[in-house]
Image 1 (cartoon, helix red, strand yellow):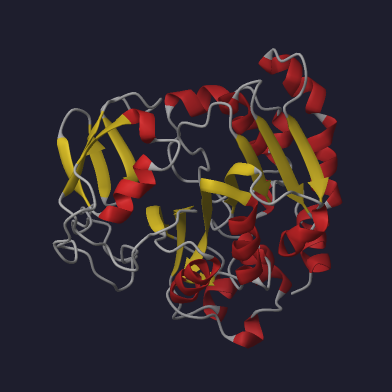
Image 2 (cartoon, helix red, strand yellow):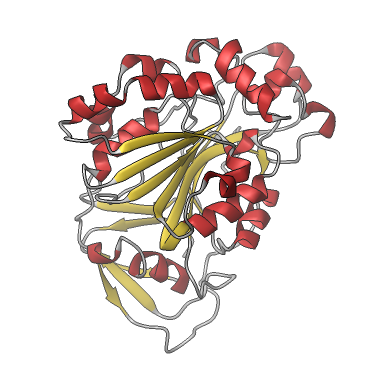
Length: 351
């Protein structure tokens, strides 16, 4: 599927989110009160052409420089611009001129709405498979976000490699996308509707983990996931037997991470100082860290807190001087909840 087909689908075929045939490119998560207030400051024209599948609002980003891969009409960029503040910056990259036209048309409107002297948002036309061609400097971003876009590109591994290069040490790729429990058959990859609906290009979760690790993101962490339903009978028939999920992952650029979760007898205590999370900080789906309570963690999780922007929000107990083996409770297998479960059961405990 070439980039021109994506441009046609998102620039011409779709005139708004109501034209979507499935719920893959939609967001079901309930935003926090703070996120809802920030979304109220986003122009209606921008929100009308939003096709994200998750909430890409990483925590503790004041003053950060953020790159938004596949920024579309700019909703996520304008949302994050409020959280990084006037001293932060958000750079959006998108390949669809029609979407960029909407995003750029409202730069001044948002600057005035936010009360900023100068805009802290900019947009670049470009292909996220070829980020190296955009003149962005390696190690120049604190955080990279993406919302239901990596599935649209053929060379997903190139996106992960470029993201790793563009991040500062301790930086994070925080992104939502569509995943499948098996590889989508090759003959469906070129279907323009399946592709535009974010299904035929869905990342098989095993291939995603391999590509992320090969790019240098050694320990990808699943934050949220939900099974998708396909309301269109014709599309459902074409994809029969494949389960799809919308999921949000966080990938840290950190040296010295272990391939497995290793136990060094460490623990952290959360101070309760991160906005939107005064009582429990969700590092990922398996790490719901309660304020004031000693929380045992593996060495990788320790680094994700101690060597990133989160360091000031935790007290740290222990070090790496003694190794106690693999952290109990961690294991492989399909990371998502089965589509048929629906019982709200908590995931098995992990490090």
